[in-house]
Amino acid sequence: MLLQTDKKRRILILMSDTGGGHRAAAEAIRDALFRRPGPEAVAVELVDVFRDYSPAPFKYLPEIYPWWVNNSKQSWGAGYKLSNTRRRARILSTTIFHTLELGLKRLLREHPADVIVCVHSALARPTMKAMQSLPGRASFVVVVTDLVSTHHMWYERRAERTLVPTAAAFARGLENGMMQEQLRLTGLPVHPNFIDGLTDRASARERLELDPHQPVVLLVGGVDGMGPVYRTALAINDRRPQCQLLIITGRNATLRQRLQSVVWNQPTRIYGFRRDMPVVLAATDIIVTKAGPATISEACIAGVPLILYDAIPGQESGNVDWVIEHGVGVFTPDPREIGDTLLAWLAEGPEGLQRRSQRARAQARPDAVFEIAADIWHLAQQGPQATRGKPLLRQGIEDLAAATLRRARDH
Image (cartoon, rainbow, N blue to C red; front, side):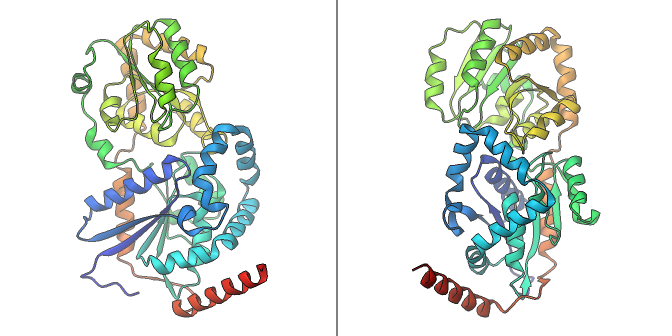
């Protein structure tokens, strides 16, 4: 497992499609590494651990999670709160490890790496436990992708680095017994292409064929167009705001059709899924959205204040507090109040909107993904970390024997 100076460093990023943020963070980090130090120096793999290396029901979590959050938010929030203590997080992580143990060890055999990067809270501690079976393990980096209300499972004390997006997430790491030198406040990884795609407001509006003088309000419900987007759009329409309204429905074709049948009281554009969000945000004065960490981070980079209408209980609850405390926006779950807030902000005129924009941009960390990539690359030069693990071949034979015994016992 000794590193050769003339070979590429191998980076393995562990994620799962339980919500879009984990894959987005993983792809942002991968592509930042491809820029610096470059594809000639580094090879990066992304693995969906739950889908590809887990038994049922964990392998179905990419399908279960969005259904659960969208259909029973309160039960999800209750479970998040109940499990989010140091003791319960330790018990839950141990349970996940014993369920995923064989798959995690197979993953480590099939994807040897110089650095393993984890962007999913439920995988941090189980992966480290599995890595202890190796005679020399890769360096381990955890990139926390929740902004504020971070679960205790994010914090693995044996990790070489835990990179966090906010001061609150940093403080939670210290509470979990991590050393200050293990933690680093970087911000949330936003894809380099987003940074590159940002342009000035006039150019963005010209590209989108928008009026250069009238304010632009963006209403978005995520990739799947979830949440009260339709009711919010109607409430805004009832207020007849002096603005241009852009609505992004994502992949929700039904929502798009419903909105297209509305008679609008202001210039309104309805889009499906778009890949040019940097341009759209650059053209925008106000965004109405849910409290997702990626959307908040991108809005701050673009200098767009937020009106939040929804948050997933648990991991997004703290995002609302953060937005309010830093003057980046407000939380208004009632569609009618959203319309009232929008009218009040527009009434402040260009100067008021510019002040709000500046407050949002003051919280931006556009270089976060490159700071994260630099830390990972630094650790890739260090060589394997010492463990008390068994030789890899012996461990594989023992895992196979254990699996055979389990199958025989089950039958």
